[in-house]
Length: 358
Image (cartoon, rainbow, N blue to C red; front, top):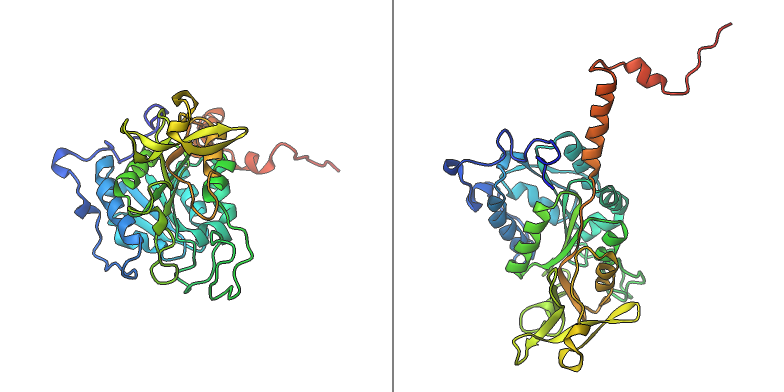
């Protein structure tokens, strides 16, 4: 469903789409600010992917907004030639909610990290997702606090030795995908920073989705948590990384004689199990369905902290009325009921106001 379908202005301003003469490129979305992340940081790969795919959306730069919180990833708005705001710790979804509600002509993005989003900002994140605000939330997950120099974060593994946990972390980590699905997010995806093709595909789908879209991005912090996702990278990921596509059987791993993945995901009781594809009938292999909430949650739980079987792609994608559309509809309803003449005193009085006569 598009903004036009809902009777709203097209995203992109008066006409929504740049003219042929105004065709945008990655360079147009690149600011004049020096990019200041540590050498080897996964943020560079994500920034490059975002700059490349933004022009393909056909949305003007001046109708694109990036709001960030606090953390290394939250420097993102400085490096994009769009509108942006470097906000306060954990509150980016709240600020972005107000913006999306008041300005339906804007494409609003939130950039956050595992500490910013899931610690002080946890409450704001889950409510933005459950309300289905028309936001695109990029959650950079490097399993560490990088900006404040290496403390454990809400996604760090149990036993993680850091500056703040010298004997190992005692906390059980969040699974951001499971959390988003539990909050009823209408779009939930995951990608790896070094997998440009998959990352761009998931980001593009999130951009096209009307409603809350959360994309978890695994990315490396070479200074304080180097190699945290190396087991998922090329050469190491053959039987670990499980890409899913709506409508296709979930097979992965080295290609067999049939040109398909050597491993597959099958139903096992109320959960899922990874098996050798040759050991089961093809009809037993689970076919991914982005509209199946239970399947999405089961896929998010297929692997725990050790990343033995890690799903990437789009877990869930469904349609539901957005909070901002519903809020604007209420405002219009109130205007219509008042024949365009607002009565502030009546609003303040509410439904339960009495006049006391002496």
